[in-house]
Image (cartoon, rainbow, N blue to C red):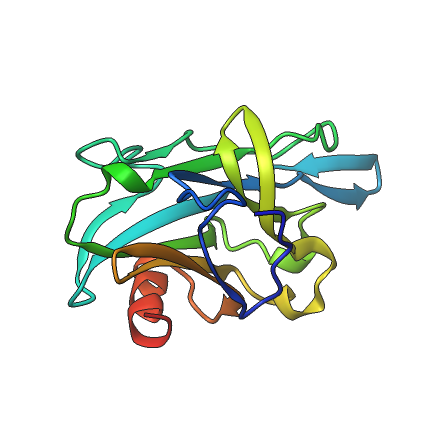
Length: 202
C-alpha cells in the first residue's frame, strides 16, 4: 500500500500480503489565514468541511456524512467533527478533520464512497496556509500507509476555488478500489458538489 498516487490514478485496495484493506481514513489539515493591517497581523479563522457521500449502484445518494451528520446509520463511516478555525498557532502536524470508512461494514448496496471538500465561508483554497489532504490506511490517531496526498496550498490549480473532489472509492466485482481525483470544481455549496460527483466522477 506504500503508493503515492497522482491525480487520476486508480488502485485496488489490497495490502502487500494480499489482504483487502478494511479501513481507510481521509485527513484534512489547514491553517488560519494571516491578515496584515495597520495594527499588525491578525488571524482569520478558516472553516473547511470534509464530507463523505454514499451512492448505490444506480448512483443515487443513500447518505451524506458531514459536519451536521457525523456518522452513517450503521456506523461504517464516521466524521471526527467540525473544525471551525484551522490551526491558529501554526501547523501542529495533526489533521483537523478525519473521515473514517470501514469497508467491511458498509451496506451491501453501496457502490461508491466519494470524498469531497468545501470551504464553508467561501475562502479561496489558494489563500489557506498549508492546506493538504491525505488518504491513508489506519485510524484517526494512527497513520500506517499514506496512499494519496494533495498539497492544496502549493498547487496553483486550486487557486480561485472553494470546492474539490478528493477521490472516490468504488466497488468492482466485490473488491474496493480507489480513484484519486483531486479536482477543484466550480461549486459553492456541498449540495452542488454532490451533484458534480454524480455527473462527472461515478
